[in-house]
Length: 309
Ligand SMILES: NC(=O)c1ccc[n+]([C@@H]2O[C@H](COP(=O)([O-])OP(=O)(O)OC[C@H]3O[C@@H](n4cnc5c(N)ncnc54)[C@H](OP(=O)(O)O)[C@@H]3O)[C@@H](O)[C@H]2O)c1
Image (cartoon, rainbow, N blue to C red):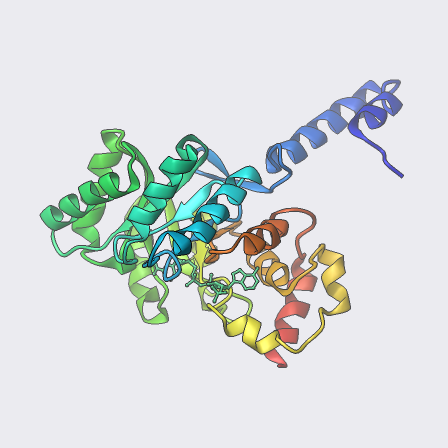
């Protein structure tokens, strides 16, 4: 039975106290999901849908116009569905340039939250690289820049703080995707004031949940998750398997949604940035930003499932 907000509120009209708390409850739900029904989470005051586009590899080197077409269609569909976050980096071949070109052609800059990285050895080198990022992304404001894999982290964070104070970037952070960097990563989280961290985390790669994700939660730092599928690792592990019955309980209709909903349900409330270069992936992956997420018991069940493969 459809029991919409209007009927719910009119049914409660005779009970003002209950109605007031119902209003609070419903506005809480509305805050958690945007107009397109995508779950959102805040990053330095900006509410962002929890699935973004990662641009490593597939946006690095489109050979010709034919190779650009699926990337254009991907970004178009993504914005059509209410997606906002695109993550790129100067080290991803021509990805920044490709994103800048397509975003300009599609006229969707204002709808997007553009995140890139700095990977440089000195402040001067970092500053020059960031100017290149502005040029390639064809924008005068970059929403987030993170220090890529902690390289020259103290100098680069100082530079990013200056850029943020000048209003040229919206937020700053650090990234890693390597366990060997976790101790150093944690140390930076403890000594710096970061808006965001980006780290690898997936159903079969849970090391970030030991210390880093709980620390982000404790410190109120926004989290982006890279490698949510471990590239093709999780798909390869499950390729011959039908979806388990419990997938329906979390509203997942594909393996990709199972893997993403696991990531999204971590209490640190991350945003995931799966690599997406096909329209069908956009429709599929944004589906993970709708409907229920696994609770703690279901998360445990999912871990047991993958560990047993
Ligand atoms: N240290 C760092 O800062 C760091 C490190 C790594 C990654 N990153 C960021 O994180 C992003 C994500 O990482 P990633 O792209 O390397 O790996 P990933 O997100 O774990 O996997 C992406 C791959 O999964 C496949 N895929 C995506 N959606 C799918 C779907 N619905 N169904 C089936 N297959 C699907 C695609 O494979 P095919 O294209 O082969 O079909 C895609 O290339 C990167 O793009 C990058 O932006 C940052």
